[in-house]
Structure formats: C-alpha cells, structure tokens
Amino acid sequence: MSLPSVGGASRDGYGNALLRLADDPRVVVLEADLGKSTKSCHFREKFPERTVSLGIAEQNMMLVAAGMASSGKIPFASTFAIFTERAFEQIRNGVARPGLQVHICGSHGGIHTGSDGSSAQTIEDLAVYRSIPKMTVIHPCDDLSAEELTVQLLNLEGPSYMRTGRNKVPRMYDEESKLDLRIGTGSVLEEGNDVAIIACGVMVGLACEAASTLSEEGIGCTVVDMHTIKPLDDNLLARLSKQCGCFVSAEDHSVIGGLGGALAEWLSSNNPIPLEMVGVKDRFGESGGVSELMIEIGLTSESICEAARKCIDRKNAA
Amino acid sequence: MGDGVEGRVDELEEMARLCRIDIVKMTNAAGSGHPGGSLSAIDCMVALYGTSIRFDTNNPNWEDRDRFIMSKGHASPAMYAILHQMGVLEQRDLLGFRTMGSVCQGHVDMNWTKGVDFSAGSLGMGLSFGLGCALSAKMDSSERSIWVMLGDGETQEGQIWEAAMAANYHSASNLRVIVDRNRIQNDDFMEVQMEIGNIGEKFASFGWVVREVDGHDMTALVEVFRWVDSSDEGPIAIIANTTKGKGVSFMEDNPSFHGKAPDDEELSIALEELS
View 1 (cartoon, each protein chain N blue to C red):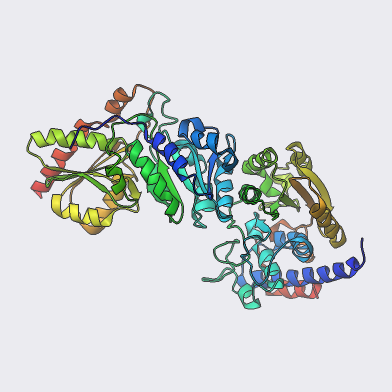
View 2 (cartoon, chains in turn green, red; view 1 turned 90 degrees about the horizontal axis):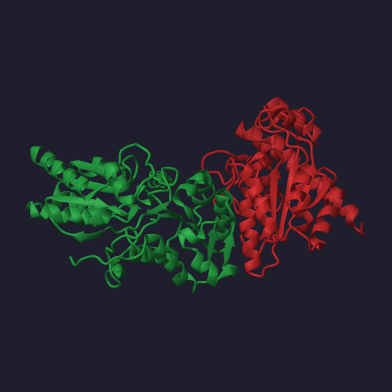
C-alpha cells in the first residue's frame, strides 16, 4: 500500500458532498448554528434558498427535517454529534419510526475531537443510533470516503446517521479507490490470514499502522474500513471469520454498543471466534492534545497490536 | 354570515355528533384510548374538514393537499372519526382501533392510515414537523396550508417554542395552529400540574397572529377558519377554548377520562346523551 496522503477532515468531505448533491433540487440543508463546523456552510453560501437555519434548537431541526422529507425533500441536517443526541427521541420517533429519508450528520465525534473536552467527545452515538430500527449508521475514516458515502445517501431509502471527525487525518483512499466504496460494504484495505482488524473512523489509519508493525513480526493482518456500522457487511464478516479466525475491533467510541459491540453480536450468532475490542473503556474523555488524549484513552496503533497478539493467542489456545 | 351558512352549521354539528359517537364506541371497543381530548378537539376538526381544508377523499395522499398534523397524537379517535366521516375509513376500521394489524393505531401514524400526515404519540413534535411541511410548500411555491392541532398541556414541551420562534423567523405564513385549550392534561388540571398561563399571548410574543375562539361554537369556528383562509398574515394560532370530554356529561371536565375508555355501562349512557 502506498503511503497515505494527508487530506482534510471527514467533515470536509461531508461539506464537499453537499455541493455535489446540490444538482438535485430535492436536497435541502438544515443547520443548528454549527454550519461552519459541520461544513454545511459551503452549501448555505451557494444555495441559501435551500438552506434552513434553525438556530441552537436541535430538537426542532430534526422534526423540521422530517416534515420536509414528508413533503418530498431530501434533508441533510447536521450539528455536532453530541447535540444530535439531544434530539435522540425526536430522531427515533419523528424521523426513523415513519421511515423518513432524513440524513443526519454529527461532526466532532469521538475522543479525537481533542481539547474541547468530554462534553463534545461523543463516544456513544454509533451505539444509540444503531439501536434504532431502519437507521443506517456510517462513520467514514477520511475526507474522500466521507464525500463519496454522503453522495450515495441520496439514493438510500430511509434515515441515516453519519459521524464525521473534526481533525485532519491521513487519507485511506484516493480519487480512484474511493469510487469502489459502497454503503453497507466493508472496504478491505489489506489482506492477511492471522487476524482481521475491523476499524472505523480515525482508527482505520491506526489499524493500517498496526498491520505494518505486526507484519514485521510475521503476523498477517486483514484490515477493514467498516465505514457502515449498520447494516453490517455479513458476507465479508462470514468470509473473514473463516479466513482469519479472530477479530480485533478498533473505534474511537465506547466499546459498549458500537462497532465492537456489533461485531460481538454478529460473532455470537454466527461464528464464535475470539474478539478483542479497542475503544473507549466505559469512561468519559477530557481536554488535551489529540495525540496525548488518544494515548491516555488507549486509542493507538500499539493498543491494536496488543489486542491482535492477544486475540491470536486466544485463537491458538482454543 | 353569508347565505346558507346556518344550514351548513347544522350539517357540521350533526357530523360532530356522529364523530362523538364513533369516539366513545371505538375507545369502548378497544378498552383503552383517550376519549377526553378527542371529544374536546372534534368540533374544531369538523369545522376545518367540513369547510376549509383542501383534502381529496378519493386521493388522501394527494401531494398538494393541505396538511393536518395531529400533534396531540393520543386524540387519534378524533382523527379516525373524521376520516370515517370523510369516507376514508370504514366503521370496521374504527372498531379495530388499537388491535394488532389495525389501520387505526393507538396513536396516529402516517404509515398505517391513509389521510394521516404525521406519526405522533410523543408530544411537542408536531409543530416542528408542520413547520418543515410549511417551508417545503413555500419552496415549491405551493398554496397548500399546514394545520397543526396542539394540546394545551403539550405546550409545556420546550420544542413547541423552538418551533414557534423559528416559524416567525422563517415567515411561515402558511402555518396554522389550533390549540385545544381544554385545561386538563394526563394527571390532572393544568393549574394543578403546571399552569402555563395565557398561551395566546405567548404565541403573539413570538410574532404569531392569534385569535381566540369558543372551540365548541360551530358558527364561530366556521367564521374563524373563513378569516384564516382570507388572511395573508401568519403564522396564525387559534386558541380554541374547549371542555375536555365535551358532549358526554360524566367525561366533561373530568381528568380521569383523559386516558380511560368508557366501560359498557358508561358507553350506553354516553350514546343516550349523544342520540
């Protein structure tokens, strides 16, 4: 794999995608005062007549979006990931239950958000949205994949939640490889037979780093960008569970209920092989620099390496 | 009032009587449901559906219909009774209320019932949804109006005021609210639970045009909806002063019939009073 280029943050990809979607007159954008942060601001600047600014009132925004979806629009509503959760019940009852095509984007998710501190560091959004029937849940790893997957939302029936990140990250895709991305299909970035590291968001880059370290030890890793947490890619998991015999999950999210939780559910029903989870261990974050915080919380390539070694040991002991 | 309106009022009052009979019958058949707030809201709904709202009974999902958002979704019996009168629902649909597979779900649900524009059941959300419908209509240069029925207890939800604030800012002149001011919420009278004072003044302070009306005076209701139709102003809030349980003596002003169905004996008394 060639060295990754440094791109924007995944939120930049979301903002770019909205501009690409503007050709469809059904697309409308809703904001709750954080357009400059979520990057919906670019759409607002060019298409003010199709942007609805609702102030700092997320609950209202979600139902305005629902009403617009019921009237033939395709709303993209964004705010910080944590503030979408303020409107959880609105999303559950007002958007998802009637199956309305509202696309919600929560930016600044995860510990990687950094110095803003624990109030903004959403670590449970993937879990809570995954629990809602009919919701598609997506967490892209870089700007190019966020852009491509957001564009594909146009043709997705039903509601979705996408978490994007605040900070710039290395690109896992280029202009060509991004075209292979599909909602609901995990992207295999590397193939190996000893362990499958299944990651999302900023942890995908760290998973690739870990795979590189482990290969020097003679350990072959498959690395998956599982950008779609729901629905999970059953076919890929079935193949990899046989091929690798153990999984490591890696997410900037609580180990409870997110990607790791989803994999645990899948494995217990389908193929109970060892799983080690790298994620936030049932604690809140704190302020700090991104790198030092990720080390403090245990979201590092070394944590992934340790989890992989342990997982392989468990597999071999079985 | 113009020629023929008095006859029309008689017709509407008869329609409201039939709706009330449906409301008590379907809640009795289900053994549960919310008759009190259905009986308080029904005259407003009859006046609206009978005179003003643009609704095609042969095509309830007509794209350019006016929308009716029943935000106080527990008053579903009132919605189903109206749709029965409009010929969208059958008597047997109503009697299946709250049973498995019924098109008449416990709370109004747009995915289950033709002619229902909103899936309610959680209070405080309908006005925001209506605002979304209103903004879409404006974007589409459509003449359609958006009506939202709110309960007065429901206005304790903060989201109502988020939506009220946004509606005025976004000049949603096609958005119309009816507040069913029956003064009773689930547990007790609002003045016991948490009285919120003059709801009309509150809407007015958010920039809404407000009218108050006796929510059981059919002539006054027809007049007020006629005024709304001719008005370019908005958003508009109609505060309809009502009596919970209106039309059935033992339910009137009785908090215990917010969420309790009449038993068989109570039903026969109710039907006698409504005959």
